[in-house]
Length: 135
Image 1 (tube, rainbow, N blue to C red):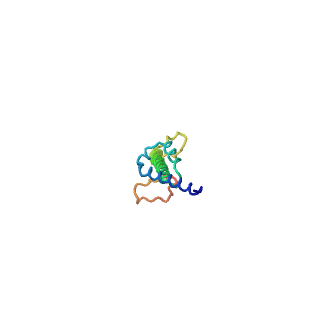
Image 2 (image 1 turned 180 degrees about the vertical axis):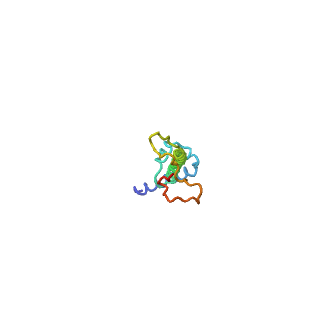
Image 3 (image 1 turned 90 degrees about the vertical axis):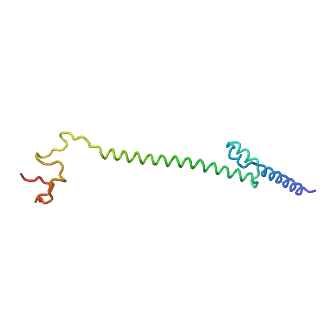
């Protein structure tokens, strides 16, 4: 027997053993393995074997699960930031700062709320709102 025939028979024997191991393997146990155990089991098998593909898919599943958890946390933090921002905006908009005595000097008798100077819409003044009305 030549070397290539011997090598071919050894490869066939190892593939048959891998197939038997795969058929006896409990597929749910792979998800219960720790990362360290999965890495060791993954390294034991050839890259074209079913066990290697299973281990590779398990790594992808674990990566997706971790990314989903990170995305959930990011979404929660974003929603919390929006709620806090709305609350702070409402709080700051409703805050009336105190006026100091010398801040806004007004003419005596001039109303501080100029936008509603005339209560009756039929009252018409020839003067613009910015000018004081004559007495």
